[in-house]
Image 1 (cartoon, rainbow, N blue to C red):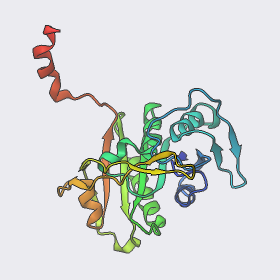
Image 2 (image 1 turned 180 degrees about the vertical axis):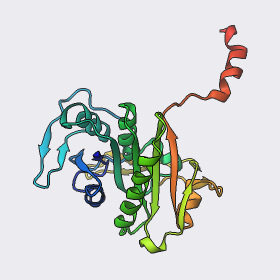
Image 3 (image 1 turned 30 degrees about the vertical axis):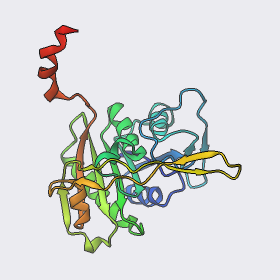
Length: 248
């Protein structure tokens, strides 16, 4: 099995090292990741500057681009054989609910899916972020399961693992995405020269945390696995839109 590994926390992040070590026992791995932290990069591509690579002593490849750049470049140019699977992570922090739209971790997996490959995004949910090994262990279990039950062509698995010792995990739940309240206001301050600068405020608190959501599963000690699709069409609105579109 050939596995492409990437992330959005950067090539030197602890999560990607633990993930690579775990998956290297299952097959041949290639780790290609940004040369810096690109959290929140979503699906952005670098279009106006060339991409450059740097091969590190541990065999990883860093790229001066986004997570999406890394996966696209790896599949199209750097892999000697097309990967059988793309795995993105282990992200330092959860990617739950609405956060998946901004996540570079999920975007890296999504690019693998766009290029026709099964893909997984995995994140460690918590504050201390100690138990990357727990997340890696569940990724291995999921990959083993995918060998027997392949993903549908349009889906990605978004996995969030509580930051707990492996024997403290209560189990696995298949979930839907929850939602958050609106984000907090931007924070305005000044730089040393007295010029206005702005920081993003805290994310909004959870809004939809029903028992079938990813938020609820992780908060209660379960691994959350949410199948994501890349088709953003609002199918429920098609017929309603057709009813009045003729007036335009």
